[in-house]
Length: 118
Image 1: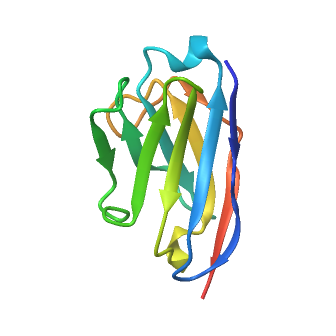
Image 2: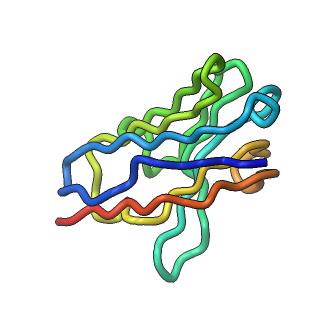
């Protein structure tokens, strides 16, 4: 199973970034998809998840109203639009497939760095 994340980078506080995760049809179909992040010295934490057909989304309280997760079931991609970024959003962001609740996932991507400067 391969999950390829892209779109990370350096942005000033208040700015926006869009992360994208590409995978195969076999991986994408039937899986709840999501994003997690891990800041230096901290444990990995849940950010957002989206149901198989995209009709249901879940967000961490810290990103509600600023981040939006979406999926394209024809292109087998899942995106994370991040707006109003804060320095505390700085982390390595991981795409995940087979997300269970807000703590587990069956498959993980390699991660993409997001750095928000103040």
